[in-house]
Image (tube, chains in turn green, blue):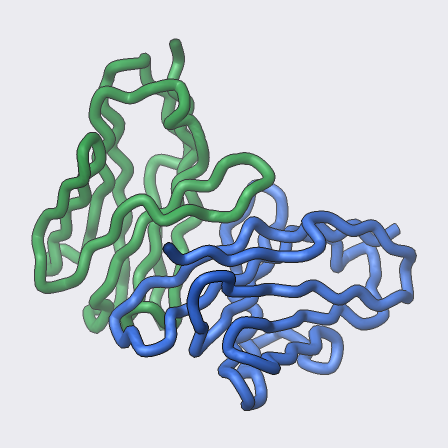
Amino acid sequence: GENVEQHPSTLSVQEGDSAVIKCTYSDSASNYFPWYKQELGKGPQLIIDIRSNVGEKKDQRIAVTLNKTAKHFSLHITETQPEDSAVYFCAASENYGQNFVFGPGTRLSVLP
Amino acid sequence: GAVVSQHPSRVICKSGTSVKIECRSLDFQATTMFWYRQFPKQSLMLMATSNEGSKATYEQGVEKDKFLINHASLTLSTLTVTSAHPEDSSFYICSANKRGSLQETQYFGPGTRLLVL
């Protein structure tokens, strides 16, 4: 089955700097890769996603890149703000909105 | 929008009792709903997948007789933890796919924190 790894497990950046979180997946059949932000005590919120027919997607300060050959995808947050502090989870699916396999998460701290 | 609600947000119960958690899609019909469990500082682990009007599909290691799932309508799924024990204490989160959207993502609820004493 699918296995998703995520690095780093924790990340601290200064406000205004960029943050990059990387995930690797094992199943070459995976075709959908969402990223979720989870604040303490809350459910995950979708922040950006990418499908396997696209190499990059951007939404304001957030971008995701996908390398299908190497089977990895990354989340890029630019101009970080303290409110970006949260746990970020990547996921992979071979059937779009079904069968998500989540990575272990990255705790991002943005220091003012 | 795609809003998913859960009720209750938190519950404390005694060991041996049963607890029901509701998951509702507020502004869309959900073909499929998913139930996850999340232990502190860990990732989300899928427990089961349910489609409206049919039996839920449970992941390996999840006891179907202990975690009863009912997906009675296109907007409501319930998870009942039967004979709860302290080790069942966790954060339970549901999610849903939009009906009619073959390539749609999962929309998550706010979660329910269960504490079994």
